[in-house]
Amino acid sequence: MITTVKTHPYTDQKMGTAGLRRKSKVVMQENYIENFMQSIFNVISNLQDKVFLLGGDGRFYNDIAIQKIIKMAAANGVKKLIIGQNGFISTPAGSNIILQNKLNGGFILSASHNPGGINGDFGIKYSNETGGQIPAQLSDKIYQQTISISEYKICLGPDVDLSQLGTQEYCGMSIEVIDPVKDYVELMQKIFDFAAIKKMFANGFTMRFDAMNAVTGPYAVAIFEDLLGAAKGSVVNAVPKPDFGGLHPDPNLVYAKDLVDFMFSDQATDFGAANDGDGDRNMILGKSFFVTPNDSLAILTDNFNLIPYYKDGIYGVAKSAATSTAVARVAKAHNIGYYEVPTGWKYFVNLMDSKRITFCGEESFGTGSSHIREKDGIWAVLFWLNILAATGKTVEEITVEHWKKYGRSYYIRFDFEGVDTAVADKLMADLESKLPSLSGKTFGDFIVSDAAPFIYHDPVDGSSTKNGLIIRFTDGSRIVYRLSGTGSSGATIRVYLERFCAKDILQNPLDMVSPLAHIALDVAEIPERTGKHQADVVT
Ligand code: VG1
Ligand code: CO
Image (cartoon, rainbow, N blue to C red; front, top):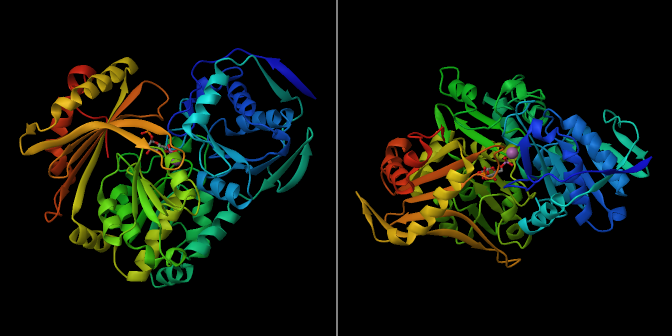
């Protein structure tokens, strides 16, 4: 049944910020998945002892890729695969299963917040035994394999039925199909005060959760409606669809527009939230009120003692460099550790494993803790519900009180999408060489205190990573530039703008950062070089 197939390398299988992410049609090319998976299996030793998790967010091609991976894992002598029923598992639930069962790693088939369907994107996230995605050094090794691969192994057996729970033998490998929701729900019950949240719903509290036709629907219905007693129908777009029903499952003000419009309407519920395609991102809304992910991380950290699981204290907190410094002020006030890492959740893993941090987050709607090693959308929603239940306050009250106590970091991200890769690379290189000359320079009211690339030294494994360019100003404002590592075509230039105000906390964020936006575009010559005078996405 096991055969070796000759193949030719693809040159574009380098993993980005979170795994391999490409257009569906690229991934559908002959042997594309096979080459990539064989390259991974080639760098893992003793496969006969290894047990991996497999599942995905249900997007187009999930079903086909899963069958290929099963057949290849069997042919490569993997001991066992644990697979989510019908091929489904969210990224956070997958991380939990790897950790709880001490697995050797796992594959989540997802392009996360990128659209799905034949004209959308497909992707594979590869995690190791930490429950988090592999470090860059290992993905470089795998990339070397992908550019020299000449054959792969596959079992010629029939497709495996993934609809029934239970264990079966397949081509000499063991397969266990599991309920993807159950363990995750149990974990959430250990962390949060479900009784208090349930009582809040019983007293008439209302919410809307938008699962965006992606993987979190079944998790959200089980938790919010069935266990916590939110009204039936509180979870909308709850059934995962291969093309996400045409939605772009990115929970932000632009792509989760229906939810945002609803929360800013007369019908608004007390609380609103959305998750992304694979369930690791979250957006938090109150009645006519939006909480930025930056503020959310700061607020959750500040309120750790309201959550049963963290009552005894937290180690510290980390954020990506591009994320606002709001949480830094909270870390200082609580006298806990504080770290800044490159963009990408994998950089938090060592800090969690070495007990340096408990919480972490990114401006890109990712928040999480060391309960797993991925960001966790539903966890963040439950954390907010738990705070609301414990305090009896609204989302807006909690947030405004936070600003009063700590000041406010106004924050906006500009994305310039679909830029020619060579143009984007040159823009970043030229900007980098210009940075030293900016120090001390004055732009209107803003004086540059320091301008340099962001370089991270991992305190655990000693590795160094350069990610993005930062201009800091004397008043605490910052401009960060990065190229996205999750796109599937062309380059996306991200410009992150942050302005701190200690007292003036109720202004419009876009107005507040607008002087910085002008500086950012001018200094990097974005309009001249890209032809774009405006960002494609403003979040
Ligand atoms: C983006 C975000 C980053 C996040 C990554 C993966 O990466 O900026 O913060 O960790 O997506 O998230 P980039 O390189 O495009 O800026 V997910 O939910 O797509 O796994
Ligand atoms: Co995601």
